[in-house]
Length: 193
Image 1 (cartoon, one colour):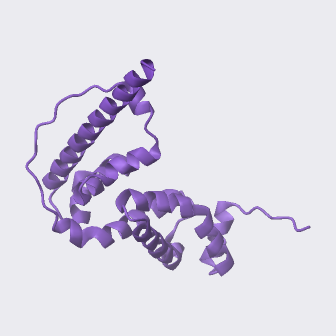
Image 2 (image 1 turned 45 degrees about the horizontal axis):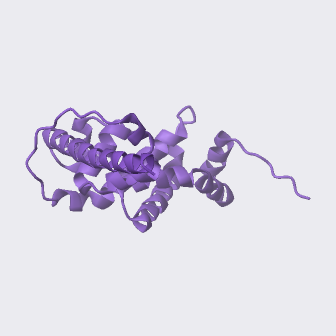
Image 3 (image 1 turned 180 degrees about the horizontal axis):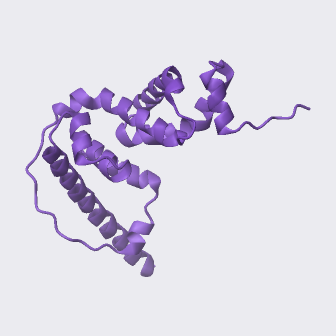
């Protein structure tokens, strides 16, 4: 029986820097799910996300020599995946129709309605957003980019980034209101059975 040897992330990266194809494959397999998760936040089509992930890993292997060992690999990879996804969508984002900004209101939600949302439900809510709003929301709220950085990356102004974030949040609030009303409706019907 063969004993499977466990290799550390640092050793794996070092072997990739040496051009070892077997270790590049291991690195790909080790971080594939993480990279797909990032890609799916930016692209609603799974095939497009897979293509972005594959392109991202090609970029990783081409530039792995620039990776400093004292860095954490995941944020470095995430930045490459995000930038690759943005490159893919940049032309489409410039041509998206934009609606007027509507005033947002403070809404409270039943905690139990939100608690019943799983990651797939949240991804569906994000998928319903127009692409530019979804991208800005992901970049600002999840990946921590500033509006100035988002503007430079998407070739829009920082104020457009802010407007799109506000619109995305308002649409998510509306979707959550709907989810809450559906949850309450189902909860009441369960009570009367």
